[in-house]
Image (cartoon, rainbow, N blue to C red; front, side, top):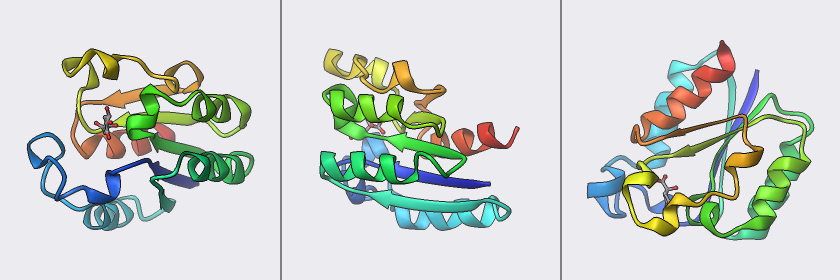
Length: 138
Ligand code: DQA
């Protein structure tokens, strides 16, 4: 089973960024925990602050990996291009958010990803990623 977590803009600052919303753990530390927990999965990770790089990565893995776990962060709410990429590839995509975006500002209630995603996991903190991985294993 080959899965990839793709994180969008500002998620490289997890641990430092608005800890009251996103927590105190860095993604590197959390990713190591995920690799230990799901040690039968070939788990990859990619992060970019650049929209086109996220699209390139979705296209690159989207015909060979078993699953994509995508937190497009702010681009979720703005990017038709990332939404189209999710629909263009064969690999199923689970949309993930750390926070419950529906409890936050109205502009975060819109997603260009959800209509092309297999499912959506949001609001469970970093555990949202764990739950998304589990969904591919069952
Ligand atoms: C986020 C929610 C987005 O609205 C926000 O722009 C992010 C992170 C989340 O994981 O909760 O950067 O995707």
